[in-house]
Image (tube, rainbow, N blue to C red; front, side):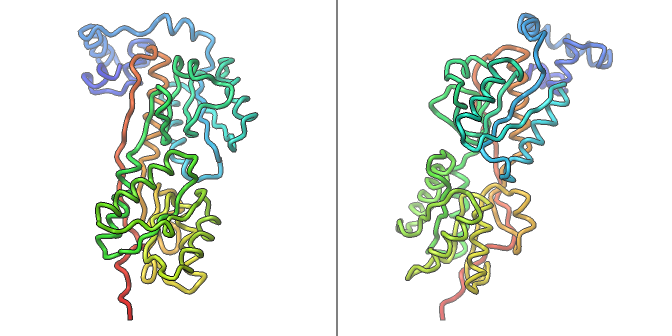
Length: 332
């Protein structure tokens, strides 16, 4: 379907309507889509459509923590595509609880929802690997190399390294990393990027500068207080996400330091909090709305056309410079 849409210069949603609900598109577009579909040998999966005659026309998005602002734009992107293609979206927060995961898995297996978008990095309890790999399931943001699933990701290692390289280019040599929870692959990837950048810059790895964290504001605040109490404290901190970065800023301010004059802080994600923090946070922007949109397209395409070959999309990020990073202050 994507090939037909590209050749016709229209969206996949328009192709879907032209082939299955032709009254909803103009005669000119309908004729063009049918002509290209015939040329490419594309046929809608009519058997799949018949099996879905009683389907719910809804997608389930599972997240671990509904309070995390990271998910808002991502869900918004998925909802936009879903509405365009006449699907609804159900959002479920699991809080990492297996009983809750099982409830949502039952919704999927019981066909009360048609497709599953996972932002958890793992299958929910109650959903087997075999069932997930046969059905319309897409991983977003958090990869799981053990699962043969479609995925929409960013290069966490590469962009974490770029964040640290940016600090190094400004003159920082004592650069700390406020980690995420090590059970999460994105945390391990961002730590790997931090270590890679130090190695490439010829800076020694100092375990004392790797502070454990859990992506939360409070842990970021406490970890930063501990880092600043070191005999040779860091002049800059790369944080595994924005929320912990905001905690780092607060910790610095509480001990009388100025950000960025005395301590530079850089985050990862570019949530809505990054721009309104005081000072506004320099961070790595993930294209969250695009990630959600691409994931929803993948799931719906699989529902309408069959699973096909598993796709893995790596989307680009951006370093957003605001006001929490500067060259280190000269020592007196």
